[in-house]
Image (cartoon, rainbow, N blue to C red; front, side, top):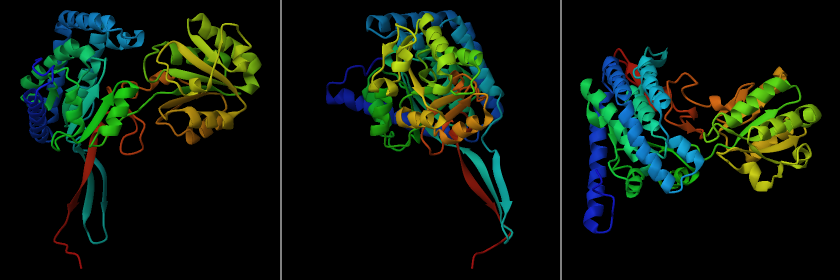
Amino acid sequence: MEKFTVIQGGGEKRDLHQTMLALGQNARAAARRLALAPQQRKNTALIVAAGLLRTSTRDLIDANARDMEAAAKAGASKANLDRLMLNEERVESMAKGLEKIAALPDPVGKVLATYERPNGLKIERVATPLGVIGVIYESRPNVTADAGALCLKAGNAAILRGGSDSFNSSAMIHACLAEGLKTAGLPEAAISRVPTRDRAAVGEMLKGLDGNIDVIVPRGGKSLVARVQEEARVPVFAHLEGVVHVYVEAAADLEKAKAIVMNSKMRRTGVCGAAETLLVDRAVEKTHLAPLVKMLLDAGCEVRGDANAGGVDTRVKRANEEDWRTEYLDAIISVKVVSGLEEAIDHIESYGSHHTDCIITENARAAERFLAEVDSAIVVHNASTQFADGGEFGFGGEIGIATGRMHARGPVGLEQLCSFNYRVHGTGQTRK
């Protein structure tokens, strides 16, 4: 499994190149079969894999412990260790995720539209798989299960390249998926795993594996996503950062705001849907600002605020310009007082990353304007930003969140992993 960990001589480099090309060729062949695979076979593969995850829980946690120990020794941050960690609850969540995806309607072959032309031609727009999807991710071993399952259910082959820090965990999860495919009579290459920690494998995938990868999905830190977006020779579904805002508008209910802000920031600080900036309307500065700031401070969250926020508690640190555009992924939040809805929207558009942004208000008109004008993949009214998740959207899971404007935006689930073609039915028509 570790044959390619050191690339020095030309021979080893060529071996890696040939191995990656073979992965691409096998995935392409598997994709052709998956495009026609009956729904029941795909579902069987997922259900069997879910059962294997449960029976392998102890071994999986042991493998994860080796990854955790190595990551800690390498100086991984608290947030990265949290993403990497598996326990019984998280393994069970993975298994349930596979079962939820199996229970979803098969998107392949769904008729998206149908119409008839004046000349009698009947035209259908029908959902089809994208083909072969390369997924490059860091830390989170559960992505192995989520991405593999979603690609499979949407009729796509997947090539998974997990991070070196989750190498042992991902290998065991992939083995469960491969056994599920085998049991269902589907090609094991339908969900392939890059069998090396070597970073050169990422470069091979970004080149497209000789035309055998149709789209790349990166899941990881800013440096990984930036590299993928810069170097990829195939389309990319990705978000670079999650600079997420919560705006407490003039008509916000204080108790509702406290619950939403606390959950948005502190439920899990290392996820991309975690709030990073709190904006408070000047109209409720005297009633809402101090309770919200003190609540966060008392919960162990560092607050970096403007002069207004700094005036309510001596524990508040002064924010600088960089804070407004920072994705902390930690128990840190920036706080600013804004003079109304327009300034809040302007701040979000100036400093945000078009990922997820929230307004807390009882004013329906203000909410409607915020949802219409904030150009983010996900905009939220009166709910936690941590619902920015494909599972919470009813997708069964997600392969990632996309902030671009082409094809897929927001959580990338089954429907977003499909393209479509037009099927034209005639009765002998010819064109003049």
